[in-house]
Length: 604
Image (cartoon, rainbow, N blue to C red; front, side):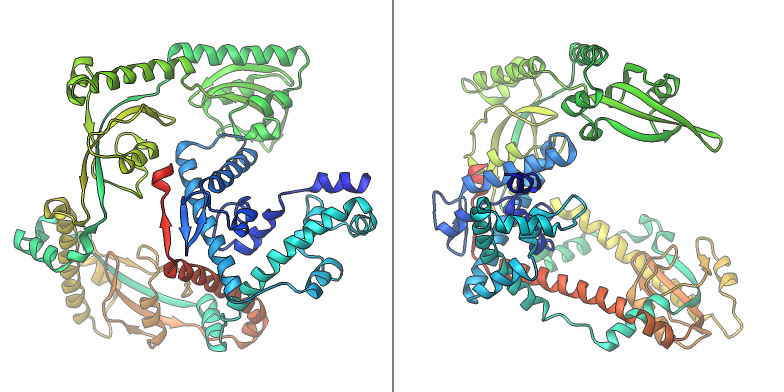
């Protein structure tokens, strides 16, 4: 039983291993974050939540993956994800599930499989990470003795059968990835160019002619110019179908009673600790701060690191003393100072804390909900506006919302309202919907069909672009006039000082992978400097905020000895970047070519 118990102690989700394979395509766990591979390979189609090249991903499968990711987030952070974080998490899970299906389909199309010889090799000679993870400590050290003992244990037979099945799924994906990686390469010329960019020093000076030298009034476009730009760039202003909501919303703000309840709860926990309950246990179970997962420990800190009320309480406390509740902008804190020391001339303390945020209680939320329920009841009898007027509530209207939107101006992230808008017909009134910060009642006011946005909607942005364009023309004219006046004995600094607003810089030695201070990093500019002869003044170079006139004072030489010493590490780093880019582009290509039916709005 010892071998199996140790394996269980080490055990993670088997599919978590596949995060190695898909690390370039997703920011949350595994294949993918615990997606159930059995659903994908079984061919079950309980509903059409999402369809990828004719293959369905069910809503149930998606929600299981979301639940696993939510739990993973809790374990990592010690907190519940916010509404905004949950929206991001849901999008990431959906994207990862689609990617998973596309990869498996590609594996099948190419006929990639795992042979029995490969299974044996990865189980004996070169232990595969999907197995290795169960026999490694937290530092990643593989325990070969424990592994050999497991191989000899009859109790582990089912475990190794499961591992064999996992390898049969993983190995073909790794083969596909190696095929894609094989398309990436770094030539000797490219490698020398990378080395040159990182090591060859340049001595430059330059005058920067910013487009902000001219105010907006000097570059105003006419209405005819704006209209002409709109007509000639109509494709830039196409929009998908959007929807407009009317709504009445109330902020979820903690009351004085909510604050008192939080205070009283922390006082109760303080008594429990004084009666013998471990501080660390209470912090893990109750603290709203990420440090709660570490028993509330904040480590060593000096003055100036914490907000003033917290700092004052911590530095006034005696060793082992429980202080609080202390109110800060984050909520109420219970603080324990574990030790103190002098670091140079500064005092530091080692402290732990339990944070309880002041949030609206259930009774506060219910009071807001009841107000909005009353509005809904009346709105179904009379009009939405009339009902709001009778209750003294204000009705607001959103800007046109796209399906991809998550935010509503004035309310913040409000995905439930946007989902409601795209699931219903004009005139429909929602149930009371809520986020962490607001509750609201919504009415679908109108549906804006796809097509070009009206000129009135985009006129301001077109005007701003044309103003910037005209300022760039003015900057170019000034730069050209300055450049034409430069002679062999001209001093750039003196020229810059001759006109208000021009700046001259002569930075210390730079390499081509660095930004020009105050200007930015522009490959085209560095390309011109690489091609120039020393002591040359380059013609005006366009950058994002104006034009720059550069003089190349000197340029270092290529160092072949240093290149040979760095070549291997440069090559490995460059190749890895190319391989990751190839894999990312490959997956993007699969998505671009795939037929994907996204019905999330019907379910979420």
